[in-house]
Amino acid sequence: MTTIAERFTATPSATKMSLSGLAVGVAGLVVQWIADPAEFPGFPPGIGFIAVCAALVVAAGRWWAPIFSVLISFWIVLGGWAAGVLVPNLRSDNAGTVVGNAVMTAGLVFAAVTGIVAMIAGRRS
Image: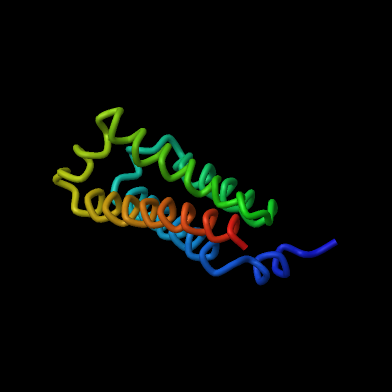
């Protein structure tokens, strides 16, 4: 049985880039949480969802595993936009909320794009 560290080391670079995008998304959520803790009921649930999806990418270890990065990224970014939450947060009077949302969005969009690239590259090899 391989350890998580060994599995992560063997992960293709495009998949690692997708995981890095998820990490940036988490950093953006942390900035938002610090800037306005009252916005979140305790702990930001998005951090947990992203962490679980990142763990699934590493644990699955298949060419299709980055789908979890793509799905969580689309769910948070497109869901936030469709729910009418993302744009107002990007226009907030609280600079931390704006910066956190911008960082989160950029990281998750990057994770989705690189996740798609990783799946295409993995399927071809």
